[in-house]
Image (cartoon, rainbow, N blue to C red; front, side, top):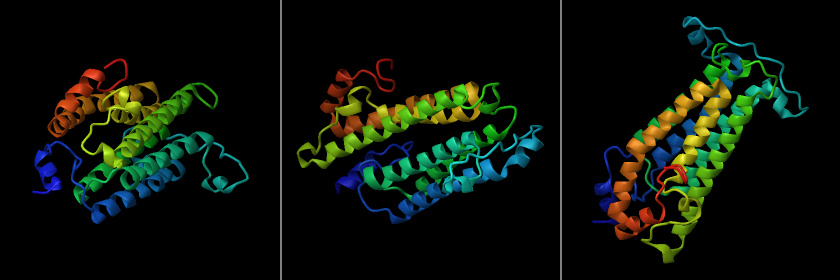
Length: 268
C-alpha cells in the first residue's frame, strides 16, 4: 500500500482535505482556481451595479447610494467605486489571491472536484454576504455617523491584513520546513506554529472577521468570528489532531506539551 493510500485510510469523513494524499488533481485544481478567480468579479457586480439589491428590497430594506467614486487618475478610476467600496473589493481580491496561492504554491495534497466546488462556493457566499450587508442601509458599517475612513473600516482592515499575513506566513514556513529532505517524517513546531498549534486557522478566522467588521460592523463581525471559532474548534482542529496523532505519534504529543495553545496564541 502506498503512502497516499495509507493516508486516505487515515482520513476522517469530516475532513475536507485529502491529508497526506500527494497526487495530481488537475480537475479539482482547475475548478478551484477558476471559481475563486470569478469571485472578485461577482463582488464587483454587487458593489458597482447593485446585483442582489432586489433581495434586500424584498426583505424590506433599502440600498445605499454609490457615493462619489475615487479619483486617482489611474486605471482604478474605471471601476467607478467609492473609496470604501474599493477597499471591500480589494479584500475580496486578496482572499482569492491568498487561497489560489495556497493551492498552487503551498499545498501539494489532492483536491477532489467536489471539495474544490464546495470550498469555492462557501468563500463566495461569505464574501457576498459581506458585500450585500454593506450595501444595505440597515446593516452597512459605513453609516455609523463618521466620515471616511470609519472606525469599523479601519479596525476591519487591520484585522484582515493581520489575518492574511498570519495564515499565509505560517503555512509558508511549514512548507519550507517540509521541503528539506532532512525533515521528512518530522512534525513542524517552529515559526508561527510555535505560538499556536493551529495558528493558520486563527489567521483565517481573523481575516474573515476583519472583512465582516469592515463591511457590516461589530455585530456581524462578532457573528462571523464566533462561527469560525466554533467550527474550527469543534470540527477542524479535532479532525486534524486525530490525523497528526496517527502520523506523528510521540512527536505530536511533545508538540502539544510544548505549545499548549491550539487556536489563539496565549489564550486557548
